[in-house]
Length: 244
Length: 244
DNA sequence: CGAAATCTTGAGTATAATCAAAAACGGTGG
DNA sequence: CCACCGTTTTTGATTATACTCAAGATTTCG
Image 1 (tube, chains in turn yellow, cyan, brown, red):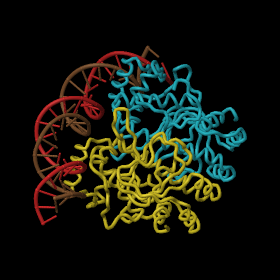
Image 2 (image 1 turned 120 degrees about the horizontal axis):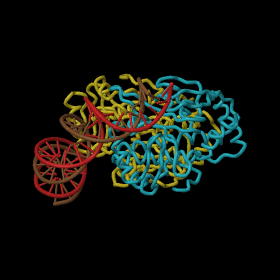
Image 3 (image 1 turned 90 degrees about the horizontal axis):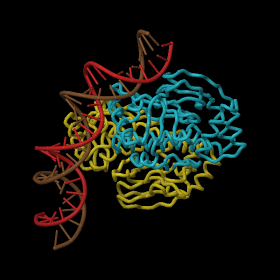
Image 4 (image 1 turned 90 degrees about the vertical axis):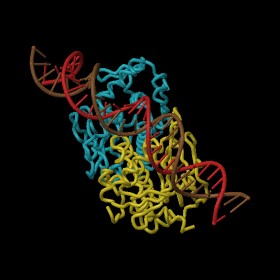
């Protein structure tokens, strides 16, 4: 059980400074651990959930379907993230949440989280901070989608994923597991699948990354970050990332 | 003084339920009221402000400049909004904040806000909630920029502004003051100025809106909302909007 | 009234979408 | 281990959307 929650504590610690006791309080919350298959909805837009989840293993994304049936992936969540923590205070979901891969999720009741926040203002702040970081990421996605060129957009998303995975210990060397199809990249970036493919070829051709078989290898971080116009400030990390 | 803060209380009440005492506590916070000219920066990316502001009058936007010198407007803020409330817990600004019009701003020290939150968990929740609504808006902007067609994107932004202004009492009839140039609309939507112009002509041509001289008239809300694919859930309003 | 800003128009170009089909890959069962 | 199926990736050709550049009209404000 503690092993599983490690990743939550690691994530909270990557964006906030908390004591060992506070970490323990978080790790010891009563949690229902659930395994889910890939491509399942965890919650849907307009639902009113009474609990939030922590990702213990796997990849999750939030998305919306527009009136014309197009899907926009709004955020990508990795181990340690709490993709619907917002529902603690915004009772109605404004996005849907789906699993990208098979996942192990820990569900925590809102009442439990509320009690924890009331009794420990420092933890409340850390959780608030976590939702603020999610907001900052969403803002950066607006910039990405609105202003950056094709290759820049793609590169920026790769940089972000790479740094966030590094922050929770999911990068080995300069390589990590990224289980996204090109169609999913497209829905995250506002690209067609075809355009994702061609953009990736461009990044590959320049020797910046290798992306195949769900594995991302960063071959030239410096140049990739330059193409991406990547400034990690918006991730508000409190841990050092060596290559940054 | 109380008159000026009314708008903050009205805004908090538009997205959260608070008692009269709590409203009074918010309205009575020590605040430094400052008048600013249009087109000035309030804070800049990478700054570490020690206070947050409330907009008492005027329009404010947050923005980032990319490496290629393009500006993306990330959010638009109106009277009652607290555009940099996030800086209470995310010490380094990840966006810049500028005035779109001459503004009257109320600055509140972070220590004051922190004390208020510590002593009154319900107010803390209301403020947390306010930042969560900002996040929800940013997510919707990702959807807008990523998936919607030109006219849809434009229409969606107009719908959002109209509803948010209505929620704080700044709509008379079906008309409101929207002091944005077409260039600013472009930077908010990821459009060129020329494209904003042509898209607006299309919406005008269909008899949906009139937008001239900083005044927005909604001529056919139903059709506008349909073109926009507008679902106000993401604004998480706790007040009724008549035409919705 | 005049200067500056903003809006509008036109023409040409670039980026990215769409459509369609072929190649490669991954997992499964025989 | 290999043949097969569905998924994913890749390619090509065409089309559409939106950008750029440039100039003219209009509005705003001092």
